[in-house]
Image 1 (cartoon, each protein chain N blue to C red):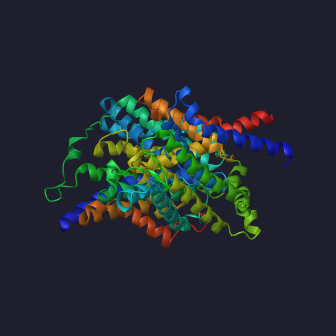
Image 2: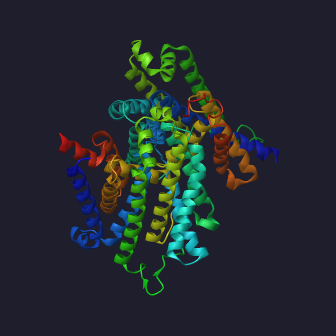
Image 3: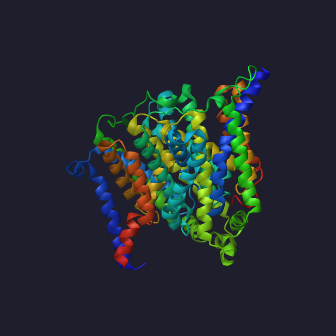
Length: 319
Length: 289
């Protein structure tokens, strides 16, 4: 990699983090509000977790909302029944999403292409169904209520993230940065390079002696851990866990965020999530037919921007 | 008890026939074009509403004949304009496309026909129960099962004996070779897609008489159809048929003993199949990978 390119990459990275860090200050002037920024961060983390599989391993999971939802319920249940501690809730959510993902991934990882997608959808719906039916534990259709995020206690001082929107935004940003750093580190490691090799040419990777199924299983599991963490954060954002968060249409939204931003780019899903959330927020405030708005968006992106916004920009600048 | 069991088995068979009809259409499209059609439930709803709209003009029987054809025509157009450009690309894109279409169709039907459910009248002689003892078997239910049987029989005959059917089966196995032999593969895929949508439209027109019409009804029928395909084995239409009937009857029987678990049993069946026989009941080795 030449010096100029890596300098440019560094500059882009710095710009992204600066934008995120200053969001509570520049967003209100554009008509946004801090809570919207927090939602973007959490959903972007989820979309990046999906893209860890889709963009960098080359397999399409269309049921990842299940692990997102499991994370949310894990966090909610931990806060409600175990102990009123925010970090514990995050860990519980992440473990629930990740461990279930690890167990199921073992069955799923042997499939490819559309069949991979189909099996992930059907298995994901199982958890939607459970969350919907097991009302005594999950609250059923009404969702899980009766918990709220707790102040962060550092012994000497504590930070109130419940009522202070900015403090909560920065808490989420730190969590986001942590997971994104881990993701980036994995993708840069030899293991991550192997995943990209599998994406590019699975058969050749197999000939090289790479245990492809096992790699896909590990990638799936990691992605579910990230997803569970994002879901746990989402439960903290809303102080609420919704069964519809496990539905396959939510999975579709995550995949769309990744594709819309640009799934071959590490930061694509962040851009996609930002555009998606803001657009949905706007559409649902101006029309009851926001569903067709989102549907038309899907159709247009697939037909005209299959490489996503970043891919489009990149191609324009290269042409 | 016996009567209750019989009642639920019949119920299950009828629901299963629906699932099978949906799943067969999905399967046809999936096998030949590698497209998971999320909008399939949407096309079912379109079929139902078209039947509802034209019934006052052409009557019940006319609607049953015409509505699925009109739905298939819509399907043909959708395939030609929106789905055909995506065949060369990653299956991800056709999936997102049909996913978006499902949104548009659901919202569109709500916009045109309203969110309220619509009652559909069926001919009086079909609405009567067969006998006092078998009060639950109305003529319409028998008629539905008969129609599904005929439709499925026709599809299988078409695929088995006609030139079009043979080409579709050949192209499912090896699209390139069939194209190289001079078959217009684009047309083949379009016709096949329209055929799948025809089945969805027929299911919609039939469902209208039994379940009534709601814009969201398609979404609820989509997931059982996926499960039917996974259980039956991807690539096998007979498997899909068996899968649909199986989950219908299984949920019917479960409803006798544990009503709350009647839907769960589908997922349990799927889990058992995925663990014990990953390729499905009649799936070919290697089709699922």
